[in-house]
Image (cartoon, rainbow, N blue to C red; front, side, top):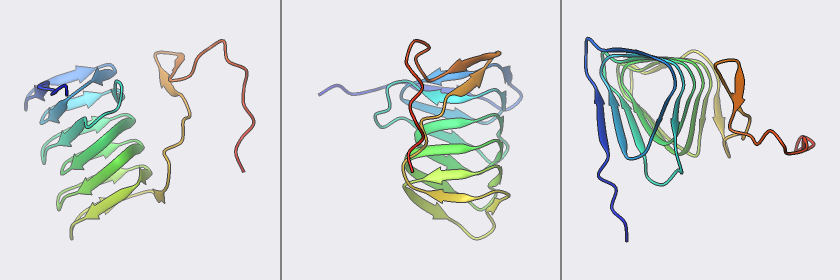
Length: 138
């Protein structure tokens, strides 16, 4: 059984512009302007600390938000919204914990995260460009 030891920290005072693709654990204490996407799923986890800010879409299996997210959140396993969490966008989840004080300025959507592509630098990310467009599920 493979064990994932990838731990990445974006510390306070650090600002990143661009999409982040990661495996393992990612902790954001600074600011990310771009999408955050997990490669390959698994048990990867994102933590947005109380002073952390993410301006972009989040697509991860597990996420803990205690800072600010401006964009939609797609969690295939678990979402935890801590007391200082502010999400300006929709939260798509399978299992959710929400502590008193957390704010969501958008919709809470239960169910399988949609497989819609993520916009990345003027291109579509997430879908294969040579695939025929599938009809929408009812």
